[in-house]
Length: 414
Image (tube, rainbow, N blue to C red; front, side):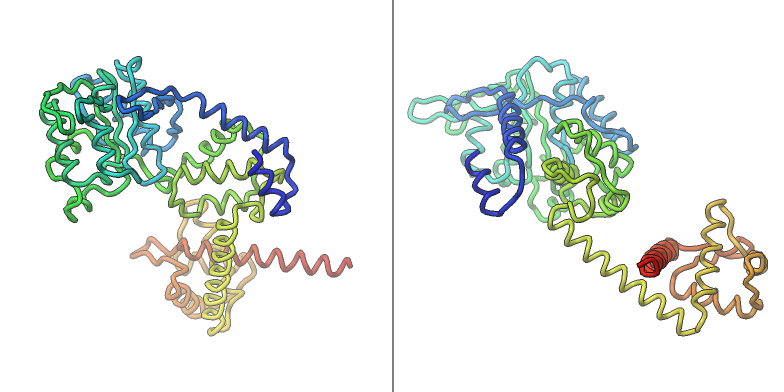
């Protein structure tokens, strides 16, 4: 606590100490919920099977498919090992815990071993146990008994350990390090990986036999970008978990967050929401976001401006910007009712709006818009419509026009 207080004072942050205390105590309580089991060498291995399938937000088809597959594996006692693959922060450990809690072994131990940033010799001893100078230390495969062992980040293991893991899974037996006693494997083993297994195989970083064994029962956890239907429900769920359901966001922030490339996936999103829960800002605006997100937003905004200027410059080379804006706006109106236009139909719509141009002039305008990539010209009588690039251009153009108009009105009032 004193460290947090010192940081706020050094940085001159005006933040209520009561909020810091509240969050600090909540974190302590959360950590104390973990049950622990002891290995023979007195290393603490956490029992963290606290999640169930009900805790997984699964509005999107991609996550629902992953959940359905995982549930089938969970209740099938003939399946001895399960392979969960997905990018960092996608929730692989949550899936592993949910599988355990959904299985017939839910009352038995669940033990998670993290292979990331651990010395290989220590990992092997934690996994298989060891015998040394008369001392016998059990590994997690023994301690789990008929429960579940989750090996998190299998690609971090050296090939020799991967081969040892395959031999154990294939024969359902193993020996401790430096030991001779053959021990029967009774636990189910869940293996997770945050790297592409096929790519690792090509680079000779994944044992081929282990790969083929694990790929018999795979679960692929989609990235956040592949499950955008879950985006808002995920945020709402996170707000409930941290007891800050009062947090609101502007439409601009939500739009930006949806477009952002979440390299850390759901975990990164959760970290951002947790950060925002410390703030008193309401609603949350772009300036409220963590620095790296604000910086990225400004960079994107700058890129948008550059693109806008480039497009406008290309159109103005031919001297008909206002007419092009009207044409693109007409295409957008048609797209809303699933209608595309041939030149004659488009000319008629423009005349109804008071824009009278010849067919030859219209054809020239359309050619330029198509060359820039703002429209899509379909074959035959299907007609033309606006492209996504065109929609983005019009949206940004009208937004900037509205801002300019508002500033002019304010200046007039002043």
